[in-house]
Amino acid sequence: MLISIVSCNKKTRRNYQYMPNMYESVGYEAYQESDAFANGVEAQLPVEGTLPRGYSLYEIEDTNEGYEEAKATLKNPLDSTQVDYEKGGPLYGIYCAICHGNKGAGQGHLVKTEKILGVPSYADEGRAITEGSIYHVIYYGKNSMGSYANFMSEEERWQVVAYVEKLKADLEKK
Image (tube, rainbow, N blue to C red; front, side, top):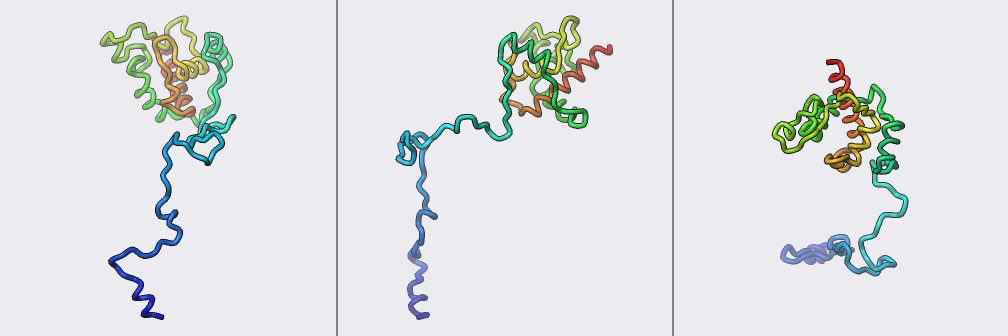
């Protein structure tokens, strides 16, 4: 019996594969035809009503009325122990300071080199920004500012909102 086991094990040829699908799985291409699903396509849409992990709904519309609603009602869900300027500051520096300036005075690099014009300071009179309006503008964009919703998570957007509020308070003290 030992001789038969040893004689079947040759190093020059492959041994038998039990369950070959475990070793050589079938690779499916996205959008290829398949009998596995009723509509005949491999790639399927997510189930209606599901949300990606880590995503939450923002149900205020991208309209002037939505902006006013956010400005009046939306509050930062982070309490004072969760606000971290060490997170918000660098994010502000990456996404906002190029136009708004490091201190929020509207004198970022693009403004100084006249690539864009008319970026107001956070402390301008008549510019009554709130947590909700800042978040809404980060989420949807406004005028020539684009949306940053895809670049930051919800928590990061709120950290930037808190940092902008801090910059605004610092500017108003002067």
